[in-house]
Amino acid sequence: MEGRVSGPPSHPPAVAIRPAIRADLDALMALEAAAFATDRAERRAIRHAIASASISLLVALDDAVLVGAATIERRRGSRRARLSSIAVAPSRAGTGLGRVLLAAAEAEARARGCDALRLEVREDNGAGIRLYERSGYRRFETVPDYYEDGTTAWRYEKPLAAGEGSGPVPS
Ligand SMILES: CC(C)(COP(=O)(O)OP(=O)(O)OC[C@H]1O[C@@H](n2cnc3c(N)ncnc32)[C@H](O)[C@@H]1OP(=O)(O)O)[C@@H](O)C(=O)NCCC(=O)NCCS
Image (tube, rainbow, N blue to C red; front, top):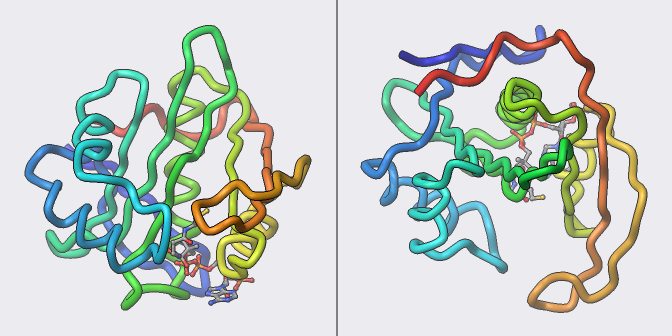
C-alpha cells in the first residue's frame, strides 16, 4: 500500500510516497549521485537506513520511477526528528516535488510521535533554503566548516503541529 501526498495547488506532482525497500537501492544511489555534489551517502548507509527501525527513508515514485527521497531520523527519548536528507531527481527540480516530499517527511515524523523537525543545509543551497523557509522552518544556528568541503551549515527547526497528517506512511 502506498500513501499519496498532493503538492501545492500551482504544481501538484502526482507521486506515490512509500518507505524504501532493498530493491530501491540502485535507484537511490543514482539519485544520490545526481542530486549531491559532495557529502553523498554511501550504499551501506542507505542500506542501513532502509532496515533501521529509527530511520524512515521515504521514496517518491512517478509511474514506478524513483524521482525523490527523504530520510528522517529519530532518537530514543527525543521528540525531535531530523531530516538528514532530501533530494529530488534533477529532471524534476523546481516542480514542487521537494515541497511534497518535505510534507510527507513532516507527516511521518509526527506519526512517529515527534513534535519538531530539524535539518542542516549548506549556506549556498538556494533551492534548499527557499524550500525550508517557505515551509515554515526557522534558522536557529550556523555551524562553520560543517560539510566535507568546509562549507557552513545553517540549522533549521520547525515545530510540527499535533493532529495534522494522516498517520505513518504504510509499509
Ligand atoms: C532542495 C530540493 C530538494 C528542492 O526540491 P524542489 O523540488 O526543487 O523544490 P520545489 O520545486 O518544491 O521548490 C522549492 C522552492 O525552491 C525554489 N527553487 C527551486 N530550485 C531553485 C534553485 N535552483 N535556486 C533557488 N530556488 C530554487 C522553488 O522556486 C521553490 O520556491 P517557491 O516555493 O517560492 O516557488 C532539490 O533542489 C534538490 O534535490 N537539491 C539537491 C539535493 C539537496 O540540495 N537537498 C537538500 C539538502 S539540505
